[in-house]
Length: 454
Image 1 (spheres, one colour):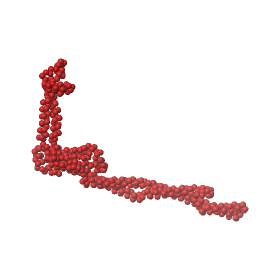
Image 2: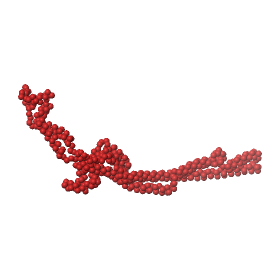
Image 3: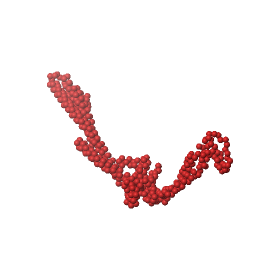
Image 4: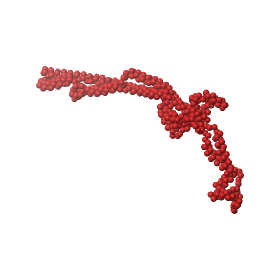
């Protein structure tokens, strides 16, 4: 269907279309005037809530939580909030409310029925990028609507306090129990540390270990010197030489004096042996002195060697004993350090739990709401519904569409020939001419105008 045919149909069915439009507008106006007036009052709140985990203490800003505003809407429209409103206003004690509940013939209890009734009329408005939330209430009485909107706002503030305080109180109870466990653990570890120190006789393990290590090093040096003295006594006993000046023999004054006396006696004996025979008394006396000095020197050198051997053995035994003692102290120190670390860990856990307990206890005792009231609900002076002007504008659009639809439906039921195109479509033969005689001038213009426009 082209525009010219549609225009012809509208011209032909304009009465029916106008009638449908008038009926629609009249019906909408009548219904709007007959509907009871409803008033709406809204209270505006600002949310500054931050999601704080009462156990871990982690803080999550509200704007990072995608479902934060949706959660707040659910809280406002929850039965707990409605019941708090009922308790604040004492609605369940009103005789009027009781009479309405009886007339409704509902199977629900008075409080449940009243909760459903209130929540049906609550409207919550939020914006996407704002922390401001509006709580509205619709009702036939403007004063009642304002009172209910303010009551829901106050109840929501109280609910937000409870939702913040109750988890903190539960967390404080949890931390109290855990604190007792951690205290027992700390006392056990400290007692274990004290008993171990008393058992091992350790007061300052690091200082004692340093002293015993120094003593071990000193014994090692003494052992080296004793071994050097022992090697020097062995060589001296074989050669009677003073080549080992660093040995104990070289440092022995008695041996050095005997060596000097022996050299002098041997020199004297060599001189006498050249002048006198072996049977001469002076020769025999000098030889006896030399032999006596040699025997005395040998006896002192053997005594010095035995002393060096004994000293080396004693130092070696003391060194082995000191090594065992240092190793034992090392093991004791490692065990003590492990116990000390356990005590330190238990102390740190106890301090952390104590800090969190103090924090959650303060949060559980605080009555600070994270919801601030920006604007209280005012008594509306104009009804929120019905909106007559909006309904009339919509009725005009709807009536026009319905009128056109009714006109097209009537044309489909009672088809008429209104143009040459209709004849061509129906008869499937060409039109030779159009007789316009007898057609009024106005009708002629009405028929010719769409063709000219086409």
